Image 1 (cartoon, rainbow, N blue to C red):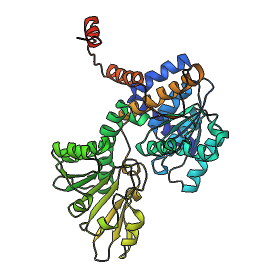
Image 2 (image 1 turned 45 degrees about the vertical axis):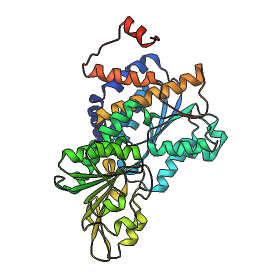
Image 3 (image 1 turned 180 degrees about the vertical axis):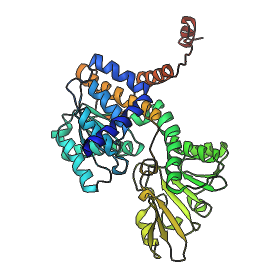
Length: 416
């Protein structure tokens, strides 16, 4: 068997394992195969190229779509999955683990140049490039979906400027997505990545979590459960209050910088840890980013502060030695740590996220072809989609719930 064939076979095994953990998406793929709701539709996806993503791609193909896929993060790409998708599904996959930024940008540009009708984004790269090219591409779009907070920030900025030219479904904000992907998924997989890279004992350590949104809550909860003392840093008073009422210490990032031993950024913003924080951190502090882009830790400032040199302490740990001899350890080059150092979300989590993606793509196509049309702008995931994903998940768990009676429904909709 050739090396390529061996790689594809390994990828097929990995995809089959993920598929077994993704009953919701599997049930949607079966319906898509029957109904063909995406028949003839050209779909471009810029997502993490993993076995779980391959299951989404197979569901879209089952629905009749022609799919092209590139990587949202080169460090998360699984090359065996790339080989298996090309061999078994005939999907165009433009991705290789560790590809440089030029290759990454070229792959995104190639998919956009193919004039897709629907885009699936994890960071708004496809739609960003499409809008940079202009109306010749944007006008052909039925719409897109977005998987990340960071991507939605970019798209809402475009919308505020009056330049967003197509509908975008905010998959990242679906309730089932928030609960499973952010709280359970990233909450668990962030620590999986950190511990794989460092083999640290969390018990007894002071962990600083910067950002207390859905993801930050999951990260903080699991650190607390492992015996760490957890400090939360926030800019939103409601989130800060919630963290305090959940039993966490809350303080400004500069005060926490002197206290922390492990730092996890998960804000969706940039430079939340910078030179002023590095100047007061303890020797041996570990810096990890769980946000989508590698901008939350100011990498340029960290390198500038490392006047004592830098070295690779472990395969995914870069040690920065400051002038006074203190060592700050950056994990996975500041990239999203759960994917760059770990295996990412469990398949059961991505089952929910990708079920939302598949149903949102179907929603966009139906709206464009049968109406009512969705105007340009960022749109919420329809409540019916959220409820259907939750219903399918409960069914896969063998859980039944009550239904309101006719009398109860009438009472809820009556006055008095």
